[in-house]
Image (tube, rainbow, N blue to C red; front, side, top):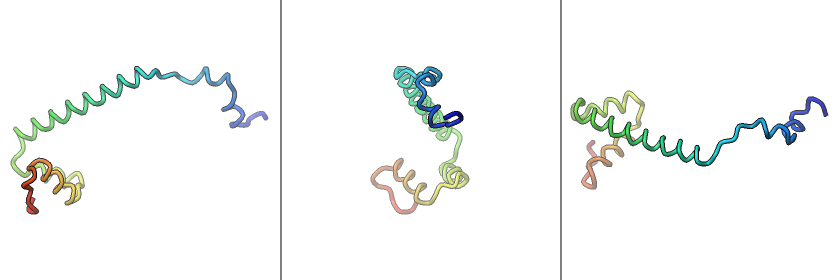
Length: 87
């Protein structure tokens, strides 16, 4: 049928028009993403440790609409097993 989108999608000639992505490229992009995330985490940690006052991170969390549960979880994650309910 002319103009039938389903028939056009099944046309083998169309597969040559689809860009191919090699797995090695995907792996490279995934690794780059991990490295970028790691770099940004380290950068943010250094900036916050040197430039923010003790509880400024909570102000940022509130600005970014983190819930109280998120803030509590972050606080406990970085203070360890002795985390108290008063964050």
